[in-house]
Every structure is written in C-alpha cells, then in structure tokens.
Image 1 (spheres, rainbow, N blue to C red):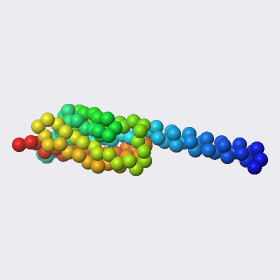
Image 2: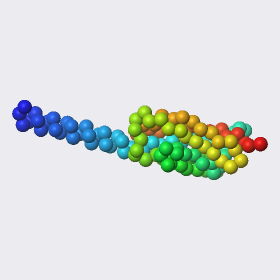
Image 3: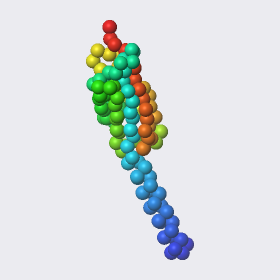
Image 4: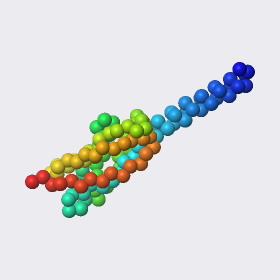
Length: 112
C-alpha cells in the first residue's frame, strides 16, 4: 500500500471516530405535559429517568422538559416516570437515541 492510500485510510478512520464521538455527545430531550384525569395541569410533578439520574419538575401549566446527557446509546431502553404527592405515579418505557427529541405526556390519577 502506498503512502497516499495509507494516509487516506487513516483520515477516513479518524473522521469516523470523530463523527461517532460527536453523535454520542448529543443529549436526549424529552418534553411533555402532566395532567390529572380531568385534564387539569399538575404542577410540581417529578419526571425522571432513574437509570441516568436525570429529573425535572413540571411547571404551573404541567409542562416539562427533561434533558439527558451524553451517556445515551442508540436504541437504549429506559423508563420515564412521573409522580406527585396525592397522585398515583405513572411510568412509560421509552427508546432513546443521541440527539432524539421525544414527547411523552402523562395523565395522573388522584389517590383516594
């Protein structure tokens, strides 16, 4: 193999590694809304993915935005949970990928 071909091969390998590294660093964003069974917003609900130690709370309109950092692999399964005192908790299985933007809303049932 001549020097030019070897150099070209090394550059291609380096670019592939850089592209894979950049892809793996893109965070996942999950957003949505938390409501009760009547459709009213649930403020201060805790939404999280325990496997990534990531969580956030819903605002007064019940909306939330959760950002999961760079440790996500394409096709990785996780469990997204939503809870609030006075309500039954809810959970949902999600499939993550670097750079993905998911929308997941929850309807929480009041405890009796």
